[in-house]
Amino acid sequence: MQLKQDKLNRNFKLEDFNILEEKANPLLKRRELKISIVSNIAPKIQEAATIIADKLSIPLEAVKIRKIQGRFGSNNFIILSNVYLSKEDKDKIEPKQKAKKVKPEGKK
Image (cartoon, rainbow, N blue to C red; front, side, top):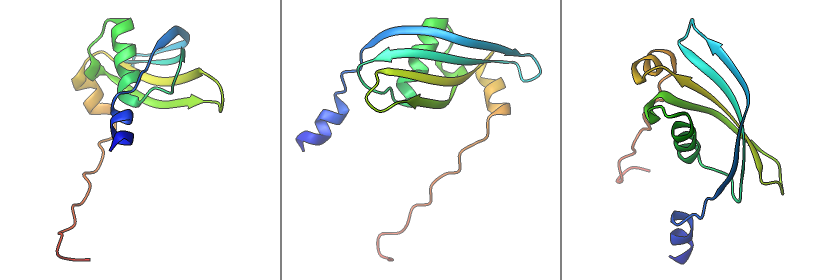
C-alpha cells in the first residue's frame, strides 16, 4: 500500500523551461512547440500540459501533448505539443480516443 501512496505523492520539481522551437500553423489554428524542461523526474502528460498552460497563460484544455522524450539518467526532457486557440479548435482537429470496453465480471 505504501508503494501506491508514493506514486500518488510525486515530488515533481520544475527547474528550467525553454521553448526550443515554435512553429505557427494558421490552417489548423495552432502553434507547434518543442520545449525543453529540466526536472528531477519525468513529467506525466497532465503535469506537462499544466506547465505549458501556466507558462504561456492559456487554458489547459487548449494544450495537447504529443510526446515526452527523455534519456536514461538525464534530467532534461523534450516535450512536443500543440497549443490551440481554443478548446473547440482542439476538439475539431485532434483525434478522439476510443472508450475502453468494460468486461462483465462474471465472464472470462
